[in-house]
Image 1: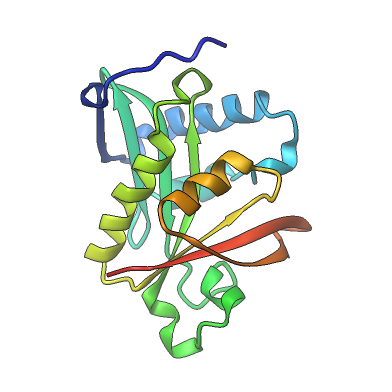
Image 2 (image 1 turned 90 degrees about the horizontal axis):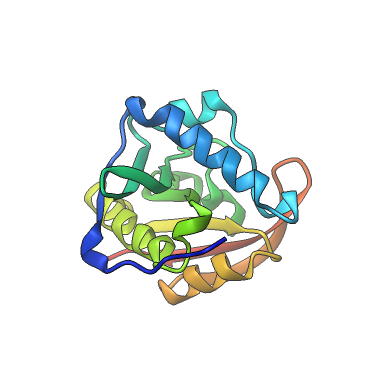
Length: 177
């Protein structure tokens, strides 16, 4: 696959709506088709992805010439077990201040344009605007690129844990200003 490098100005970032659901489902399928190891990523159902378009969640897209080429999701787990804050010992009364960086996928031909890390920074702004104090993420220990991007963005490794029906994940967190 030939990854082309583009100038930062050729990308725009905007909130996705339910109208982008088909594109996002397709991008997820393309990602799985290109994975050497299916444990690197957790497959999200269409229903789960659809739910992420509505408050309190947020889906952000990276567009190149009006084409959706990457997306990332902020997921507010509330007081459920989906809230990664529970995995790092956040108290029950403070769970509402935690938000998860749920998923990021970049189309293979657009990798190398720093879209993953740009999406992290953009969603961090959204999380702060929502009043969140802590952003958490899980990453497969085998997903070196994703781990490096979260670390470059200031996330701190907390621990390793079995999540999502038996997938090993590194848990990262970042305190928000």
